[in-house]
Length: 75
Image (cartoon, rainbow, N blue to C red; front, top):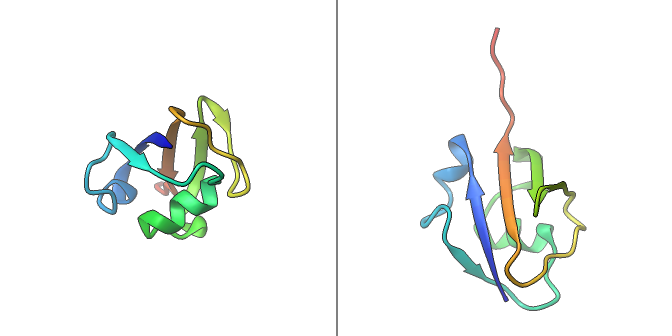
């Protein structure tokens, strides 16, 4: 299946074609996607699949859109 992935900040640097489609097996989860991209779940502050908050066990569907946000700190 194809899913679209958009990552922000330092996570975007780990995705060669940020915003483009990624091909995964049909039974993939968000955790599978992160593993394929080389992103540790602990590096992701927030993940959304089709606008809904997601966790690594969230199943992905063909054509879904995944957004990844890193931890943000400041003062």
